[in-house]
Length: 81
Image 1 (cartoon, rainbow, N blue to C red):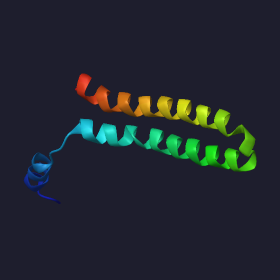
Image 2: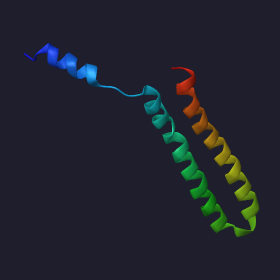
Image 3: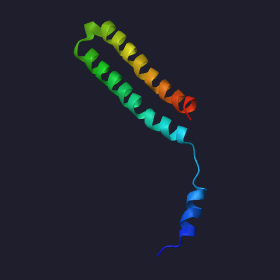
C-alpha cells in the first residue's frame, strides 16, 4: 500500500494558473477557425479570381469574428476567477 503522506506532499507542490490553462484551451477553436477561413478563402480565390474582392471581404469578417472569440476566451478567466 502506498504511503498517503507522499501522495499528499506531491499534491501540495502542484501549482499553476487555471486561467492560463483555460485560455490555452479557448485559443484552440479560434486558431482552427482562422486557419480554415484563410485556407478556404485562398482556395476560393484560386478557383474564381474575379470574385477576389468579395471573398477577401468575407475572409476579413470571418477573421474578426473568430478573433473576437479568442479575445473573449482571454478575458473570461480573469473576470471569473
